Amino acid sequence: MRTTILRFCSALWMGLLWAAFVGLQPSFAQELPASHSVLPEFFVDGFSFAEGPAFDADGNLYVVNYNGPGKIGKITPAGEAEVFCDLQELAPVEGRLSKANGLKVDREGRILAADDSAARLLRIAKDGKSCEILADTFEGKPFHGLNDVALDLAGNIFFTDPTGSNAEKLVGGVYRYDIQTGNVTQIGTGLAFPNGVAVSPDQTKLVVSESQLYRLLVYDLAADGTVSNRRVLIQFPLETRVVDGVEWVGGKHDPDGLVFDTQGRIYVGMWTAGVVNVVDLATGKWLRQYDAGGSQSTNCAFRDGYLYVTVAAKKAVFRTKLGVTGFDYNGKSPR
Image 1 (cartoon, helix red, strand yellow):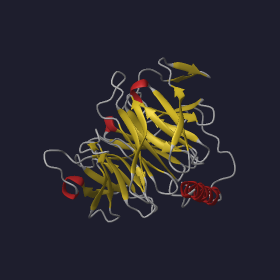
Image 2 (cartoon, rainbow, N blue to C red):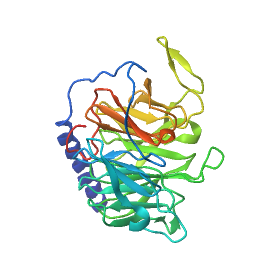
Image 3 (cartoon, helix red, strand yellow):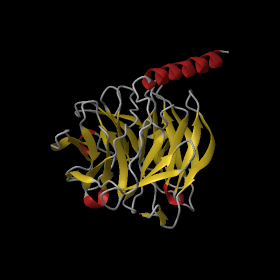
Image 4 (cartoon, rainbow, N blue to C red):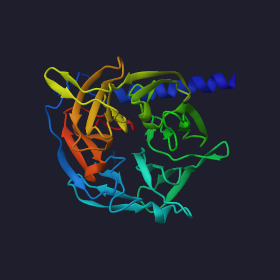
């Protein structure tokens, strides 16, 4: 009985959060520009491996590996960059490099980081001067190497653990960190390099990039954090297509980091393809494709109608004006 009541309260709380959040979002449909009709513009460089773009409430952008591995860069809205923190100083590990991959900023302005090298989920203070290890094991066993992080509106953290997995070795996993209890649960197993991860705007779906099989997976997500009904949302084509006279790049290109807009569309960086694919969550339809700015497009973030993309081959961040609003996973204001 107690479990039933707790689940009901959790569902009610998530419903109230979503209802409050919907009031902040545009009620009209936001049309996307045609594929490859808008070009990316350079924003900032200086990253040994550009990944993990995440904005705080003030519009500062955080990206990993600025001026060297393990250093997280902070870029102001004016494009001025500095080292926010060095994980090798904040959270050193003997014999291993402390280096983040995916990032998110929580409601309190703290940086959540997926440490791929030292295989830990980290939370960095708002001022960048201290760091907590939220999780580094599951059931007594260390993680393989974390890749990306996501938040739901209640602040719970979802993260992928793909290192060492591939199409023949299905050992990749997806996990959830409960923000109230600190408990970690495994919600996805047997995956071929689970990479990007995101919770849908209505909080009922969890989407994961399964990179080594070139597809996006979707799970039904319950209010208590459990998932069910894993299925393929889209299998990206292995050939280039021409749509309305425009070439859409296909091939064996890993889907990488991903984000949602408020309309339930998914934007996923397509690693070596140098493009961002846009997919409709409701139908699994491939809607658009845009130039990322270069090869090795690793991840995406929205701000003020721009889609920002980290491009590892260029050691830089590019942005494209799409004129749509990104989903704000902290539920504060539209992006």
